[in-house]
Amino acid sequence: MTAFDRRSLLRAGGVLAAASALPLAAAAPASQPLIRQRADPFITPPVGGRYYFTGSVPEYDRIIIRGASTVEGLGAAAETVIWRRPASGRMGGHIWAPELHRIGGKWYVYFAAGDSDEPFRIRTYVLESVAADPRAAGWVLRGQMQTAWDTFTLDATTFAHRGKRYFLWAQGEPGIATNSNLYIAEMASPLALRGTPVRISVPTESWETQGFKVNEGPAVLIRNGRVFVTFSASATDARYCMGLLTANAGANLLDPRSWTKSAGPVFTSNAGTSQYGPGHNSFTTVGGADVLVYHARDYRDITGDPLFDPNRHTRVKRLRWKADGSPDFGVPNGGASPLG
Image (tube, rainbow, N blue to C red; front, side, top):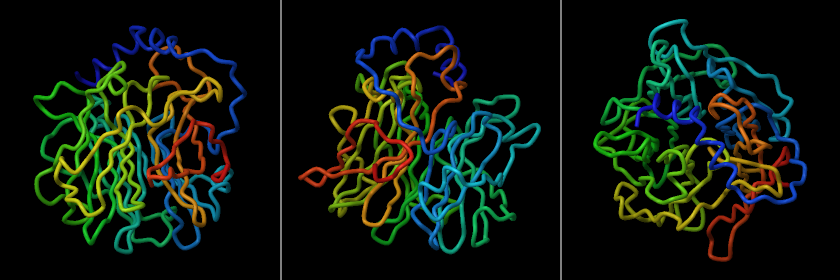
C-alpha cells in the first residue's frame, strides 16, 4: 500500500470506527505533557551535562532542537531551528521523526523527508555538525542514507554494541504487502551502511495491523544481558501501540533468529489516564533511572487524518523493570516529570 493510499483510507473514516471500539472507562484528566504538539520525541542521554530534544512539528517543515540541564527543563527551553525544508524539489515535502546522535565527536541528525511534489515519497537523510552544541549554526546536509531499495523509508536510529555501530530503521520492502518492516545493518560510518540489511520484524499480528500494517519508530535499550528494541505499530490514531523485540546481548544481531517479538503490545491507549495512541518512543536516563519518552494524545476521537492532528504531545515517565530483567512499561500515565 502506498503512502497516498494510507492517507486516503484514513480520511475515509476507518479511523474513527476502530477507535470507538476502545474500552470505555471513567477517564481521569491527563497530566500535563512535557512538550505540547511535538510528536516522535527524542531526548538524548545527558551530553556534557545537558539533555537535547528533537521531534516532529505539526507543520512537518523543519527540524528543531532544545537543550536544558534537566529533562523537565526541556519543557520551557527555547527552540532552535537547525534546518528548514527547501521551497521545492527534493526534501520539500513532509519532514518527520528526527533523531539526534553524538558519534565520534560530531552530531548527526537522521530524519525522514518527502519531496515537494510527492510529500509522501519519504526517504531518510542525515545532517552533520562539528559544533560542540547541536543548537549552534553550521549543520551540513550529507544526503540520503542509502539502503537496499529506493522505497518508503523512515524512523532511523543508531546504537553501538560490542564494538560495532548499527543502523535500525523502518522501510517498505518490494514484494512484502506491508507499509513498513524493521531492518538492521552494521554501519561503515555515520553516513553509510556496511553489508546487506537484515529484516527483523514484519507486522503480522492483529495488534500490528490495525488500519495499516506497520512496524516503525524503533528505539534501543541495552540492559540486563539483553538488547531490547521497542517499536510502534498500526495506524497513528488511538490504535497506535508499542511492541518489543528482544535479543541476547551476546547474539548476532544481524541474524533474524536472534530476535523474539512480544506476544502482544507492551504499551497501549488507556482511557483511565486519557492517553491515546502512545508510541514512537525513545529512552534517556536520569541518574541511575531509565526514562521512557513517548508521544500520546489526550483524546481518542479524531476528525480527519490523524497525521494532521497536531496534538501528539511529548510525555516522559520512569521505566521500571520486572523481576526477570525485562522492561515494565505499565500504562501511559507520563507527564512532565521523568521520575513520575
